[in-house]
Length: 377
Ligand code: V47
Image 1: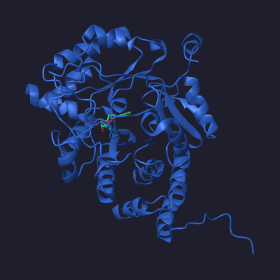
Image 2: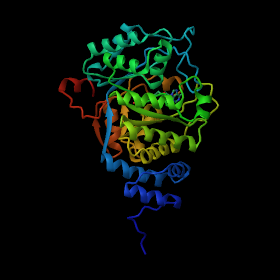
Image 3: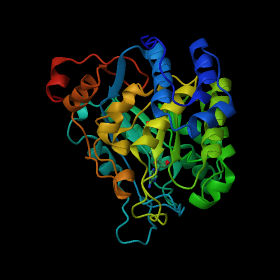
Image 4: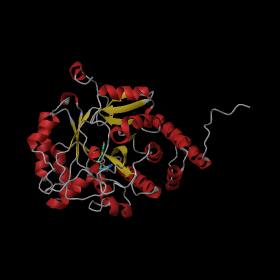
């Protein structure tokens, strides 16, 4: 008798009750999350994640045309996970002037860029007013570009350093032009892990509280998880469940991005790099657990274009963007290129059998005019 090809074969039978829930569109529990993370059956987990992904987004894979700007790498924190931050007295540390920021934003394909992704170190002298002026200057020069700026960690630092209530910090930055916020700084929420990898940072609850407040003030944000260091499956699952709980309350998270730890040039250099297996697993488990977060991004800079492409069949519906001038991952040993051309993203996505759609930060389709298109290809 021929095998029943309408039912995928699951090597790991423990996944079958989860498969029933996925088919029925039911929410997965914390225990389900643990089972998914512990299962070696990547193809089964990926198959389920792909079902959910196609239910939500069909055959589309989103990308954008963006530029990263890191105004300073001076940082008062000394997080063990990081190779980017430097002390102010370090001769290799840099801080851009406002003019530098505005000019750098315009390098290359600025007319075609739809998003500036702006994050930096916790600099003790750069005031909220300085950052407001930076945002206003960017808006004045590039009014069409969405400013996705400042992690929850930077917002908390402005609050503590300059004694301004968090709500006031957010209000001032929003008025100056901050349109939304990136997802960085979340790392792993569990205190045991946080104490080791980033003990100078706000704790997990503070990160979630600031996200909740920002969302309630009308600012959308992304969210992330840093994996592949000293965390275990319980920490990962707890992290996802806590993000999902905030989302149930605010609906403010747009995209989740799992971030693979890069150990080079960090005090945790002895830790091995993540594997392709783990990178795909993190995409797939996130798609299954985060049933209320619309998008899952396979950030090519961090997981390589090849794995990010395969991830489009394991739960991801986004591959991030042209990026241009990424520093945080390259300081920590990423050997991916500094940017991808729009055409390269199109080819990667098409070769995965997906339909590429250029989006803006809010996932509206971008219609290109001849003049902006000409400088992109
Ligand atoms: O918060 C820092 C992580 C984050 C390392 O919102 C590291 O669209 C790995 O959040 N190895 C910044 N990770 C990047 C980030 C991000 C990236 C792309 C898109 C979006 C978005 C957000 O990078 C930090 C931290 O979690 N990080 N050092 C490292 N050595």
